[in-house]
Amino acid sequence: MTSSDWPPLSELLPLSRHDVHVIRIPLQVEDDTLDRLKTLLSPTEVARADRFKVPQPRRHFIVCRATLRQLLASCLDCTANEVEFDYGPHGKPALRRSTPPASQIEFSVSHSADQALIAIALDRPIGVDIEQIDPAVRILKLATRFFSPREAAELIELPEGDQLAGFYRGWTSKESYLKATGSGLSFPLNKFSVSLNPHQPARLIEVFDQPAELDRWQILALDPIHNFAATVLYEATGAEPTTLHRWSLCPSAD
Ligand SMILES: CC(C)(COP(=O)(O)OP(=O)(O)OC[C@H]1O[C@@H](n2cnc3c(N)ncnc32)[C@H](O)[C@@H]1OP(=O)(O)O)[C@@H](O)C(=O)NCCC(=O)NCCS
Image (cartoon, rainbow, N blue to C red; front, side, top):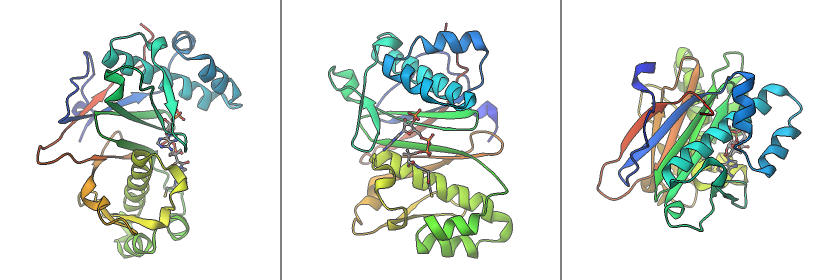
């Protein structure tokens, strides 16, 4: 897949129950754009941005949150400043459920280095995760610590040349699941397993004590941009097939 498979998003997202949208956003912007994007944030979000000690994550948070507001505002037909969020018990942001369209729109956000993904769907939970691939990361050590025993064993059995991609396939699939359910790290990472083979479709393989979860969710591996891994996971809905739409969007305050 190439960047041309992520066409620019120039119009309103065509939201329907059969569509899932993933929007790729490069987070580096000029200072004047950053300043204008910051005006779209709520006072609480500005306070959060100002608490970042390191400039780069602060800038990335502002750009990502402002772009999320713009995207949701276009779906809700309101202004970016008017979008209101509530937070789940483990920090999952959601649209405040006070108006009918907001009660149907689900979204998920992930950022890594200077790239972000925002996933949007109607009427079904969704989770997305992007990670920059770091070849220096000690994947076998991390897998032993954070993955399920089954996943750690699968990683070791992969050909050496596939292990890095397999690790990131597993990592992003696990994060996408935790994002979609909203549990974050309150759900133990070793209590469920995903597939790791980067040459096969991504799959949820086991969720301890909850076998019905396997049929509930669909995972898709994305190929967002060179050197990054990503997956999106969403609730499967009946017999109707779901179409995944990938878009790219350059942050702008205009
Ligand atoms: C917070 C968490 C949900 C994801 O964090 P992350 O992967 O570090 O960061 P991402 O950029 O992918 O996601 C952050 C976004 O997730 C969203 N988010 C936060 N808590 C969430 C939750 N409980 N459920 C769903 N989404 C959540 C927010 O939109 C946040 O964006 P913001 O920081 O701009 O507000 C959580 O799973 C976590 O802390 N993970 C730590 C990473 C780790 O150890 N992973 C091991 C995998 S094997």
